[in-house]
Image 1 (cartoon, rainbow, N blue to C red):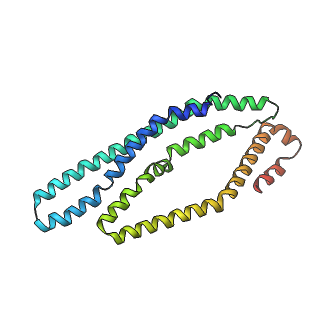
Image 2: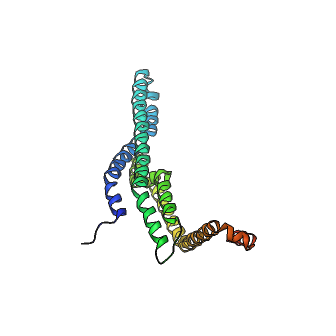
Image 3: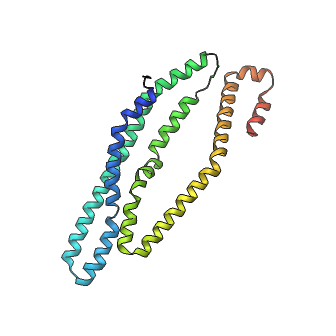
Length: 219
């Protein structure tokens, strides 16, 4: 049986945190319905009955729900930041050791690209994209609420969602190859720049600084 890689161990250790993130995301998405439901109740009950007591109770319920929403969002953000720091702490030494091993090996890969990739992963985990990924599975909840209000609006929401999915898929197909080529070119350019900086004295002595700078501007 093959041994578990450090990346697989880190992903397995983060599984429990991801489950809690999903739970908090479910609560957040349910509480996101507070504002529209509050306005519906105000128009349906308060304006018809002109009851100040009903308005007060609805406002208190909505206020508690919004405070709970803010608390859950804060806890979710804290978990994401803590997880990104733990990933960096857990994987940083391993990635650095692998980079040093590659630098002293036969391939002579003397770059810190692994650490840059780790920083990119940490930036993604702490960015807004991870929240969008966690919230996406709960989109049918909002579509169902729209269907309850109006079937026509519900079908319009479904059509709009399908159009957005199709556009995202087409964008992925059209840009996947170009993005991969651009990423490879950027990595190669950064590796060349790091090599030039490490050998700055030799580059200056041979009068190649201007040529290297011109080549970098053409990348």
